Image (tube, rainbow, N blue to C red; front, side, top):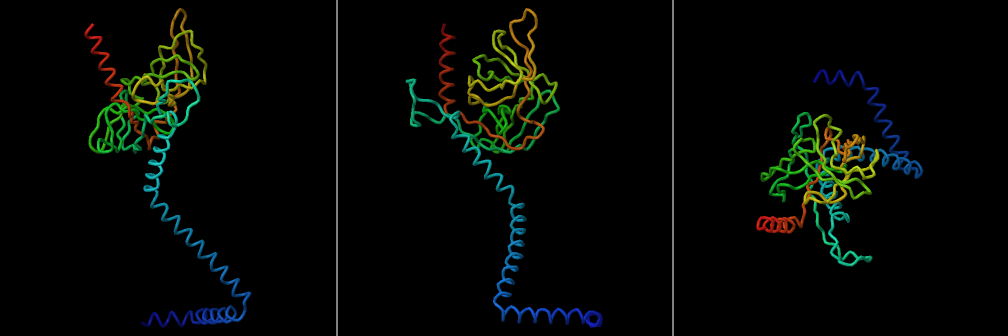
Length: 280
């Protein structure tokens, strides 16, 4: 109590000034319209600034929810792209949207584990069978191809990364019908190797390498990377091509799991074909 009295005794002049200032300001504002308007405008500005700051703080703590919403929205938009649809027409004329049937849907997922420093690298995602994930589904990012699902539990799945020596992808060179095989030689996380491209193909540095659409894993024309180096050995029939990967595997956070809505139908046809071959 004594300390409190000493405090007020030491600063009584300041408190007296503060009381008189507030009283004077109140009288001025209440008796003068111009000063009242100026005061209210200034107070609104200060209040608005404070609210903006509070809103930014709240937004920061809600980032995870907002990111989840954006991932879902992005996946939905990918499903609307024409590359995700199957053209259901037999005529080569201009067609309306009624002849397009959706062939691909996309499940947004978050990377929870990712290796890039081994010869056989894998990625773990926070989506599993409860979310519609199945083995052999392709995985892509906003920048390009990521890998293929190989194991699935209820809530998680394991993806064989492009940075895995066992993964083979069937790509094509942009603006060309030539296709080959993409694999990784475990030399660099930035580059993969494209083989089986015929020597008669027109191949140039800088050309895009895209998915061919020949497998059920990926839609056609998903970016894989661009050609960085081309070599044709003397007497050889195929190019040795190095591809700079479009996906940055060292900074991978959000991906999309590809659902081929017609995969069962395609697999059934493949099974019937194999039965016919065995019968012959």
